[in-house]
Structure formats: C-alpha cells, structure tokens
Image 1 (cartoon, rainbow, N blue to C red):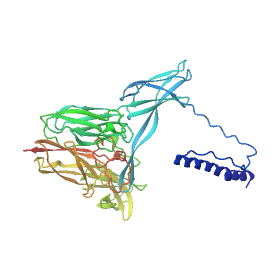
Image 2 (tube, one colour):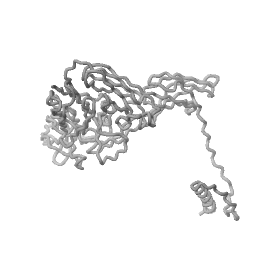
Image 3 (cartoon, one colour):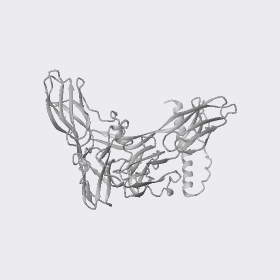
Image 4 (cartoon, rainbow, N blue to C red):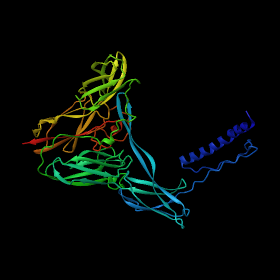
Length: 526
C-alpha cells in the first residue's frame, strides 16, 4: 500500500468524524430549537499532512442561463396563433424553436394466458416548429400556431447551434363541441373534445347525461383529442349533457375547490333537444377505426411454426361459428394430423387460469405435403385464440384466430315490454383476459353495471328490467377494463366503467383487440 493511500486514510480518520460531529450538533440544535454553539478550537491540531503536490479539480462549466422569451397570447385552444419574442441574442444567428410534447401509450403485461392493463405512460419528446433569424439588435420574433396536442403548458425552447438559449411556454386550453343539437331518440350525438392533458388529474373526463353518469373519456394515444358518440335518450324536450373532470374515470363534482381549479374548461355544459318521431333503432355494432387496431404488434403473443411449414386460416377473424379453412404446406406427405383449438380457461374469481386444447378435427395431408381442412369456429370465448396442428405429441404449427364479439339475434328479447317486466340481452365472444372479458352497460345513457363472460364460455346473457315512460329506451354495451382483487396495478383509475372513447383509445388496440360498442334498444309499452 503506497504512502499517498496511507495519507488518505489518516485524513479520513481525523477530518471526517470531526465534520460529522459539527453537522450532528447543528441538526440537534435545529430539532431542539436551541442555537448551536460555535465549535471550540481544537487544542491539538490534526496530525495529517497535505499532499506534497496539490491537485486542482477540473472546473465545472457554469451553465448559461436561458433567456426568458415572451409569448403572446400565452394560452388558447388548438389552432391559436401566437408570437414568441426574445432579445439579447447574438445578432445574425438563426434560432430554431422547438415544441416539447409527449407520446402517450398504454403499458400492458402480456402472458400466455392473460393480457393485463398496467398504466398510462407519457414519454417526453421535442418537435421542431419553426426557424427565425436574430436581427441586428439581438431580437427575434416568430409567429407560431398551437398544434393539435395534449392540453396544458408546453415548453418552447429556442435552440442555437445545437444548444438551448431561450425558453417560453404556451398553454393549450381544452374545448369541446357536440353535433347535432336536436333529434329523436336514438340520434347519434358526436362529441369532440380537444386539449385533454397528460397529468393524473387532467387527462380524463366523464359524461353526465341529465345528471346520470354515462362513462369516461380518454385521449392517451390520440394526443389529447377525442371524438366519440352517445345516443339521444329520454323523453321529448331539452336534455343536459355535461363533460366533467374525472381523474379516476368518474365525475368529480367540486373542481372549483380542487388542486386543478385553475385549469380552464373542466366542466362544460351542452343541451340537446329530443324531438318526436323515432322508430325503434335496429341493433348495431360500431367497430374501432381500422388504423387504430394493431394486428401485428410485437406485444401480441406470437404463434410458432416449424421452419419448413407454412400455415394460415382463411378467414383468420370472425364471430363464433364462423366457417374457416386451415391451409398448410410443407407437411409430411399422406400424414394424419389433428387440429386443436387453444383458448383460455379458468377465471380470476376461481383462482385458476390456464390454456386448454380442444380437439377440432383430424385431417390427412396430400401427396405434396399440403393440407386443406375446413371447420367451424367453436362457440367459445372471444379474443385471440390459436389452432394447433399436431402429429402425435409433436406441434407442427400454431395459427392465430381472432374471435370477434357478436349480437345474438336482435340482441334484446322480447323487444316490446311493459315497465317493470324483464327482458334479455345476449351477446357472444366475450374474451378471457382483463382487457376483453366484460362489457360495461348503460340504460338511456345511465351506467347500470357490467357483465362478464369468462365462466360462461364467452356468452353474456343479462336479465334487465324495463323502466321509464312508454317509448324507446336504449341499451349500450361498451368495452371496459376488468379489475380483480389480486391485481397489483397502481394506476389511479377506476375499472368496470364504460370507456366511451374505446374505438380510438383503449389498451387492447395495440395488442390487436378490436373491441366494439354495441347499440341495442327496447320499447316500453303501456
């Protein structure tokens, strides 16, 4: 061990404890409220000596303070024109103005027998906006437009020669519209809201229809903008629609007393005039926007096929009882194989989950090793399933099939009932994961509960009681996220609630889950 190291140890043994005592005395004085006394001068100086050659530490560059730029106006809805100005900058230089924003996504946890929602995630990024020159007086001015983006404050940086030299900000204010504003029962009402933010208390809103909770509005993956529909319901006359703050998915009713009271437009009100003259609406299914469904996401559990074998299903998507055909090539000639349907079984309530393999049929390959095997998709749970091609105990290929939700018949039986009587709602294709096992149900735009199809092989049958005045009453089934007692998810969000924006913004979309909104109706008669 060298002399320098011995000197270092001696310095540590003497100086460090002495400093620690000084700090401890100061902490005790702060805790007791008494003034600390000066440390007495030691009667004996420390024996450690300084190094023979002092070392000069490398100086730390002093950060150059950013120029404070001015924004006018400082806030406004998407599309607002505003100007950023600054001074004291190097004359003749070019300045690039950069907008700070986020990319929003849903974090999901995918396993062999489940797909679970984890959290909403927002990752910061910078987007170039415009370049402007600094004049001879060191001043710069640039005209910008608020882009369609998440609401609340966005930083704007002035960048020169690759370094930030100035900073400003612009606040995107949320706003909303509805269209149309009148029509008979069943009229689709399109609601558009822009400027939802990314923070925990400002990224979700809720709809109340005549003071009845309908569902929540999200815009995680749609950059703060949401467009969705509800249907006109209730007796003839003016109905009130409110778009309200809802951080956990349910309406928050005293925003003015909350930590977000300074956020504008957290409680918006509209009116819709229900008119006469509506027939009973036919049952309908509204599917997600095609470009929002990621059929080939890397997060989707992949099937396995031997390198020499090619296999596919035609079609590879459909409801229960769909007629499909398995086509394969590269198999051993004139060989019998068995097709197995692979799906989820068990439930969270029963405390067990596993994958089951159900025999479909046997088939024999041709002399060229090809196989064509038609069969009918089973009446089973919906979502992502697989068909296995097996020979003995050897798996030759796995082919995915997406089993869609469907309405049984007209969905409602009987279609005409008296108030107080029971009617049945029946759908197929509920899945077996947290993302697709259930539906959240509204009656005349009032949330009444949820239903699950796990223990009934994807079948959801609900017995509901007709209420309200004679006329048409609406039943809507929305996608939802299931939450069980063992779920460790820390996300600040309620579950089993109607996600009104699920066609464009829902955790399952990135995994290829095309979960629809189902629209039904019943007529109450005297």
